[in-house]
Length: 141
Image 1 (cartoon, one colour):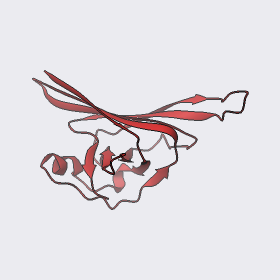
Image 2 (spheres, rainbow, N blue to C red; image 1 turned 30 degrees about the vertical axis):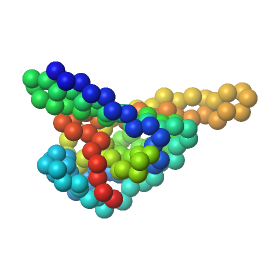
Image 3 (cartoon, rainbow, N blue to C red; image 1 turned 180 degrees about the horizontal axis):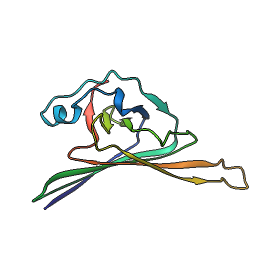
């Protein structure tokens, strides 16, 4: 069994889009060595502090699976009732896609803080998790 964790600290930008607006078969094309191009309209997410993308790859007798997790703090109200994909620009300028048009869709969860009496604003800490054969693969935009 092989286990590998890769972290992408210093995320520059995060966007989201409805999965149904993405082209089909992006993940298989990426796994075949292609660098897929995406022209879908993504909605930017303003976040504060540091955002992190982390991938955990596990290969065993059952095959390969990758879990991608994006964590960030934001005042944004990301819709939870839609199937969303997330696009992340890394500190190195790469674009990585978490989620595709096809199933398995990312799970969006958050915790909410009410702020502090000394004036620190309330915010949400979002955690987007996606598990599939390959997740957070590189794309062109």
